[in-house]
Each structure stands twice: as structure tokens, then as C-alpha cells.
Length: 214
Image 1 (tube, rainbow, N blue to C red):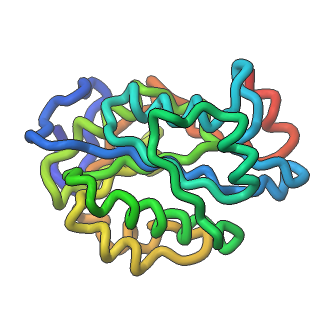
Image 2 (tube, helix red, strand yellow):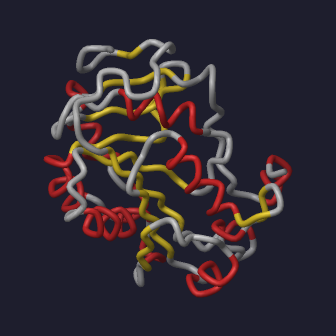
């Protein structure tokens, strides 16, 4: 396990270095897919099912529990078409204001979960699987933990926030920046967990990106 401000090696295993307690999963899936012609990303087809199902299952299989999903655009259609019975679900009425508002909704929903930390992932990154999530979960050292997946040394998703940090992160989350400002201010406390050998951090943002979905 890396020290704070350093990178963890690629060989981390599920649960290694993790104290007693739970690491929740938070899936941000509210986006309206503006650059995809208004197709909500949660409903994009992936392996014959809505993408949101795949992304939630990745968090669960990576060792997160409970897993909570924040919906926004076409929320009712997502609920009707996707099997989300195993997960908590919130709807962000202000989803169009950006990722920050969805992060606030999700952290508020998990506030009473008893989790020591939360792993936050994005619905439009299907190249990130359970192996990467498990490595980030393993970086949880307590309720003040701060860790993120890295790809060639560059910070990416998923990101882990210890529960003691949630209030400040929520207060800081605005627009599409999410927790980026918070992470920049706390670089010295951040553990980077290299995941480039087990995941690809591409986004599904444009029609050309849809070819990456199976």
C-alpha cells in the first residue's frame, strides 16, 4: 500500500489493507448525453442491457456495498428499463447543472449508511471494471481515506472518499467539476492506485465513442 501522496503499485488485491467496515459505491448516472443527441447515458445499450446496470454491477463486484445510483435525465425511463432492484436510487432534479449536484445528492443519500468510505464512479466509463474498483477499495485505510485510480500515473476514476471528508466535498461540488477542486487542494493526502493494466478510462461522450460499447 502506498503512503499518502504516493502511487500504489499495480498488484493490490481486493480487501488488502482495508479495516473493518464498509466501503459504499456511488454511481453517477444522471447525464443527459447532450453530445450524443440527447440520449441519456444510463440507457445506452451495453451487452444487451442498459449501461447503468453494467456500471452498478461493476461497483458491487469490486467489493462495494451498499451501492447507490444517482439518476437524472429520463429517470423514469431508466427505472422502467433497467433492473436496479439491488441498489439504492436517488433522482437529482438539478442534474442539468452538472456532476457536482449529483455528487451532493449521492453523498447525502449515503450519509446514514454507516460506510467508512465511498467509491465514486461514472456511468459512461465501461472500460473500468471490477478489478480496478477492487484496487481502489483496498486503498481504504479509514474514515479519512482519500484515494483514486491512476492510469500511467494520471489520476482518474473511480475515486474513494473517506466518510469524514464527505461534508467538505459536498460543499465544494459545483457544476461539472465534481470533486476536482477538493482533490487538487488535498493532493498530499491522495493515494494513487495504478489501474492501467486492468482498465481503460475512456468516456462515452460522442457518437464515435459508441463503437466502444458491445
